[in-house]
Structures are given as structure tokens and as C-alpha cells.
Length: 564
Ligand SMILES: Nc1ncnc2c1ncn2[C@@H]1O[C@H](COP(=O)(O)OP(=O)(O)O)[C@@H](O)[C@H]1O
Ligand SMILES: [Mg+2]
Ligand SMILES: [Zn+2]
Image 1 (cartoon, rainbow, N blue to C red):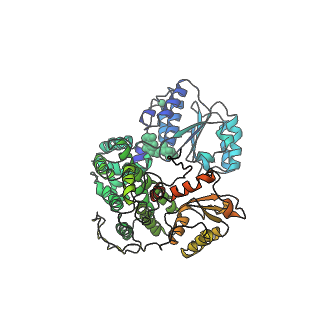
Image 2: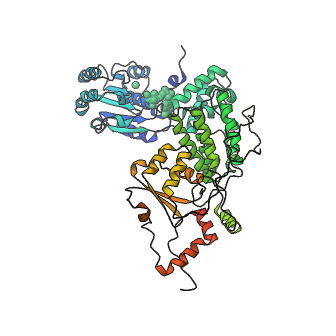
Image 3: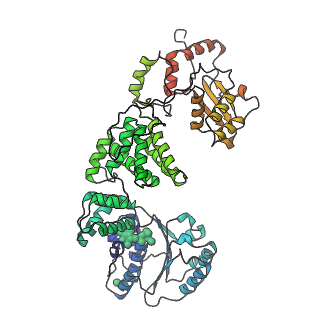
């Protein structure tokens, strides 16, 4: 009879369990010293060896030669336990037996001595599914178990196990399995199955499991069913809907060329091929994470989850970006992945997410930014910069603004495209004079928000105050509007009124009635009256202004070196 690979190769001893060394050592010692607890909790991601280890514990405890950490594998107990049919090893799937009646039954069962073996072992899978009252029924038993009873609760969600139960158990948490160890295990399995598999196919399968051995082995089953005795990486990828480096590198090509059109074309291509935005964004996160790790630790790092050939390519691409760039892109793509879980419009979300990454721009090393400082200081205010942190290193303005309106001349294949392609520039912001403290900033922001379609933010602005102090806009709003007055919304409004680079700060708390007068930052020491003029002159100096545009920050104190 055909048996799926995951079951056929289920480890029968601690030695065969991949990783989880901390757990194996502790359990081995406990068994060798005959210090068996009555309750264990095995927690962790699915397919990492919880049920497998629970069965191995059962083998160890009930082997005729035992208790031993090396069960013989041939005695009646060993054979029956391995086959899953031993009377004294009771496996309960709590997903379908979660109620009070089942637990009462179990409580009854515990009271009777083992039929043949040393211990009666209860392996409760998906234990977090047990209802609260059923847990209560179990509590007494776990509190004062008969000497022969051992409970092993397996769960992917430990926090759902009541503290009363958890505190009476020893807890082991299973980690997701190492990528390279998993590949080695699959290679062994392929050899003994007579299947030829190259590094790349195995890497694709290992990735597909996301750390779950079971999932990777199921994917291997599927791949063998599809490809026969010789796995082909391309076919395996297509089968699992995985994206190769070739497809993924289109994202980074578009990023490095700041090419919004290429991003949109990519999404279009994905949609037409029936790809899922969620899946794509997860693959993208993995890809960018691999780039980041390659950048930081080098292509030979074990932390890079890719085949040798892919590692080379990753290393080439990683060289195009800085570490900070990749860190930010990874953050963006993780945010995107999270947002997509709840999105009603996944395609639009994906488009926005990718375009945001472009708009975030690439960082310029601080030396370069400083070199630019002198040469540009006398020019007018810079073009609307990307929404980048006003910290060093600074974001360089995009080579060319990403255009939202561009209908991409879609490339027919999901293949890299040439980056440079002229596109209509985005509409420039309304020009505005220098920001003035006498303006009604609250009113200006509110109407800008209405114009920008930010209805919630506009409402929030109504309850806020805004005032300009030291060239910084300070917005004070009640706490409950925290979500509506994010940086993005305010930045959009400032752009709308022609002050895209104005620095601002949002303070959430009580809004004073005479807010405008009272918002001067308490932290900044007031310069003495005599120094006021010096301060004003210094702050008005174009190079100082340019510096603050680039780097932000407060001017705390101004001293005239000629005087002191
Ligand atoms: N750590 C591991 N080492 C080797 N194989 C594993 C490991 N974890 C899971 N497997 C494989 O996956 C299958 C399912 O594992 P299982 O122990 O039931 O996972 P869990 O209970 O954690 O969801 C096993 O039959 C085995 O083939
Ligand atoms: Mg399990
Ligand atoms: Zn045995």
C-alpha cells in the first residue's frame, strides 16, 4: 500500500528527529534518570515533530527493554506503538473530541492501570481546542495523576492552554526546522525512493514548507507525483506556485530604476496568470529577507534560504542596494503582507505597496548628502521628496517621480524589462510662500485633508490644534484620533498646501483651549531675549535651513562665537 512520505519517514528515535536538540537532550536525560513528569506540553509550529516526539517518548517509556532513550524497535510494545495501535498509548485528537464528555471518559480511563505496558500515555493533539469546562474536568486528573499516567499535550497555540493546566506541566517549545537540515533530509529520502532531485528543486520544496517538515514532505510527494523520478525545478515551482529569482528580481529591478510602471505591469502580469497577491507578497518578503541576510552575512550564510545557484544571484542583486534600503523594503513588504490578509481589494493593495516602496526611494550615504548640502543650499526648496525618514542617511529624491497614472505598456512575459522609460511627471505641488506662524494651520490642514479625500483625518483635525513654532508645525490632538492623524495623512495634507517638506510633530493629549499660544515646545530652552536676534538670523540662514530640511532636529542653542 502506498504511504505518504511524511508517514513513511516518521522518525522512530530521537536521533532521527531534525533539530529540537534542547528538547531531545532534556527528554533523554529525564528518561535515563527515570524522572518522568506526568504532564508535558509540546508547543510549536505545525509539522515540526511534536506528535512524532510524543510517540518516541511513548516508545522509550513502554519498550520492553525500557524505560530507555534507545527503544529496541522490535518488541511487541515498540511495534504496536510505531504502528499507532498500542492499547496503552492513547492518542486523542482534541480538534474533534474537545468537549466535557470526552474528557470525563478520559478521566475514567486514566484510573485503570495500563493493560500491558509500564505507562499509560495520553497524547492529546491540538490541545488548545479543548473547551474550558473540559479542561476543568481534566484539571483534577493532571493535578493528582496515578503513577502510571503521562499526559502529553501538543498544541500550536500555547497561550490557549489555561494557566492552571500549564503550571502543572513541563513545557517544550518546538522550533521550525533548519532549511539546510531539511534539504539534507529530503535528499536522503529521495535517494531511498529512487528519485533524482537537484539542489534547486529541494530548495523550492524546503521553502514551500516554511519550516514545517510535514508541509515540505507533502510538497515532495506532490512533486514526485507530478515529475516522476526526476524532479525539475521549474516544474516543481510551477506546481507549488513558487516564484523563482527570475520573477522576483523584477521587483528589485523596478526598485533600483524607480520604475513605477514596471511595478504595475508586474502586478498585471501576476493577476492575468491567476497569481494571488497574498502569496506573491509572502514570496517577496522571503526574497527581500534573503537579500538582506546576504547583504549582512554574505551569500554563504546558512541563514540564506536558497540553493547555491540562487545564492549567487542574490548576492549580485544585494550589491545594488544598501543595508538600510533592504531593511526598509523588508518592512514595507511585511506590512503589505499583513494588510493583504484583511484586504477586500488585494490587487490595489499590492499596487500601492509596491509603489510605496519605490517612493520610499533609495538611501544616499551621508557623505554624499553632505556633499550635496553645499552645492544646493542656494537653490530653491527641493522638489517634493519621498516620504522618507528625515534622518541620516537621507532619502534621495527619486530619479524620476513614480507615476500613478501610467498605463503600463505591459511586457508580455514575466521577465526582466529594461528600466529606463520616460513617463509623464506627477503634478507638482501648489507652490507656496514660506510657512507663516500667523496662518490658521488647523484650518489649512483640515481643508487640505478634505480635498485629499481624507475624511476621517479632516474630522480629527477639527478637534486638534496646530501652530508653527521654530519652523516646525506642532499638532496637538486628543488621543482617540491617533489612528487618523498618522504621518502619511499629515504629509499628504502638507503636500497639498505646498509645504511638502515642512517639519511637523503630532502630540496626542489634551488640547488646550488657547492651543496656538501654548504649544511652544516645553523641552526647548527659551533663548534669552538678547540672543533672540542671533537665533533668528541663524535659523534664517539658507544653509542652516537646508540642513534642517535634510536632517530635521531641533536647534537648541545658538551662540555667536565672535562674541563669546
Ligand atoms: N523535527 C522533525 N524531524 C524529522 N521529521 C519531522 C520533524 N517534524 C516533523 N517531521 C515529519 O513530519 C511529519 C509530521 O510531524 P508531526 O510530529 O506530526 O508534526 P506536529 O505534530 O509538530 O505537527 C512526521 O511524520 C515526519 O515525517
Ligand atoms: Mg501533530
Ligand atoms: Zn522495544
